[in-house]
Amino acid sequence: LVGYTNAGKSTLMNRLLTTCADTAGGSVKEEKMVMEKDMLFATLDTTVRKIEPGNRKDFLLSDTVGFVSRLPHGLIKAFRSTLDEVRFADLLLNVVDASDERFREQMRVTEETLRELGAETIPCIHVMNKADKIMEPQELPRISGNRIYLSAKQGYGIPELLSMIEEKLYAGSRECTFLFPYSRGDLVNYLNENAAVRTCEYLPEGVKITASCREMDQERLREYCV
View 1: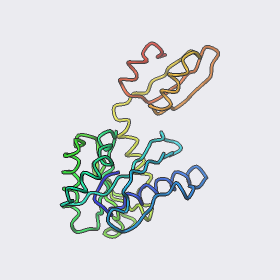
View 2: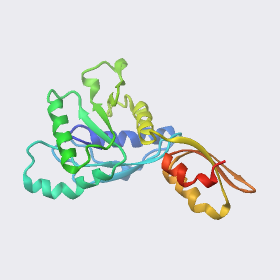
View 3: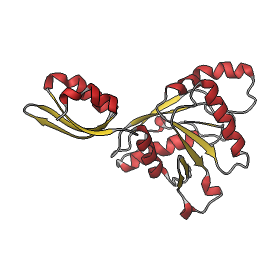
View 4: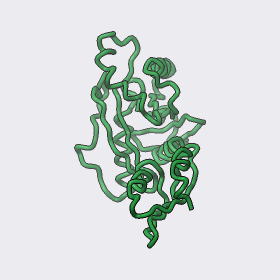
């Protein structure tokens, strides 16, 4: 999660946690929720949570300090270690306060910061948050390319955002079926952690897995393809 301060990143993280918990018929423990507050730098430390969509592949979501324009040099150095990990993300969710009349300028600041961090080429979804303030509820969510208009606070558009995240994370993936001998449990674990496993069967000859995986993983595991 990246974006200008107070755009609603922490609110979005909490909404994703509660939505996925509700889908699974459970609830989120209070300590798993992150602080939401309308103030500058409400989030100072990086927070990572596991998002478990149920019928989709789990993923780790990291909340970062909000970007601001003309940030004092001393603060930039202080936050650098927190922001640096943005470079290692597979996907960025650029959260924007769509109701703020200065949102275009705030998006520019975010894009400049990402360039400075060397993260400008990472795939990105522009999450136009607080859209319920400028659009009618029946108009939400609205999706245009890599941009989605939603409301994290009201919960409008969260399932659609989860679909976009899955599509981006597994863009270019292929559906493959593998048969691993029981001696290669390490490869079974690898697929569970790095691919979207559709089915898993325990047969006399080994573990048969059908998964949507990256091309590089298919090549690496070619000898086990069936």
